[in-house]
Image 1: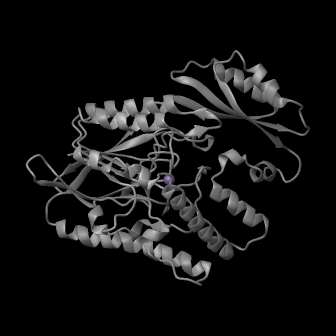
Image 2: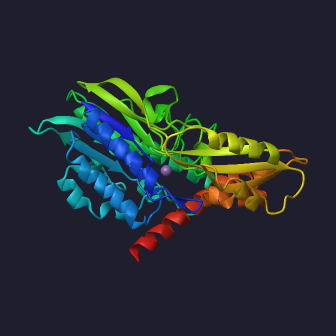
Length: 407
Ligand SMILES: [Mn+2]
């Protein structure tokens, strides 16, 4: 059986006032073609289907059109789990309809948790795959709130809650250990050991939802993860992987090669995992240096032959002085070039060297939580205190989201 693992689509993303609809459509078309060409039978999407809780209609339309087109392919099973960006109620609204089409959507942990253990059957009613469909786990899913407890204890309790959830799914899955079919789990979280070297700047990586690769129960033959946008194997364990996003979602991801994984199973085991790279539909590029150098590099970059949509460029100008109307000057300079400058940043070269520009990121790059964290740090919060504050802030965010959805 052939299974395709992808995640972090972030449909409907607006990036520096630009829509990604075109790129996303190209990525979804590529995915559909790949599914057909590779005779994929199972599609797993591990969270963050949409970029925001209330995605624009064109993004919803892209999603449903994709699912409809899947019906004419070899793909027999589709499992979609919610990420932290997804609204569970939005994902769940068309659930009965999607279920009728063999598309399983687990936007949030089910009331009866065992329902999230999916038993996928072939046309003859024979079990062919077990999926512990674990979405992004929200605090209320973990049942860890204890009034009056300190931030530090809460963090430990949340980590224990995450591990317990996977253990519980693993115990239920154990009933099928001898069934001769693969047992797969999904997840949308930060697993320790995942590479954050090229910092993904639209995500907060704290100590809260850390789960170590070794904490996942051994029963799972494969763990399909989402949340980190760079594709990778976690903690040196070949069967625990982030597929990464379909397109680069920020300038911090321009070095990444985007891909999906294709698993080939034989009996209960995963025989082979292949990495399939996506084409670059639109280049995102950072060009940095002195004004002179930036101009030369822009020219050189624009003159290169390339396929795909007009590249989007972020320019960082290193300078000692203030350059009046730098933004206009550069955009003017690049008017006739085959690229679009989306953002111009100034990096002052004097004293604390790089700190200046590292410490003053663009607000548009940052997650709300990251802004809160930096604010706390600027007030001198100690690290132990910080995790607790962040924890409370996130619970508040969750609560507000729920309220917004109810109304
Ligand atoms: Mn995510």
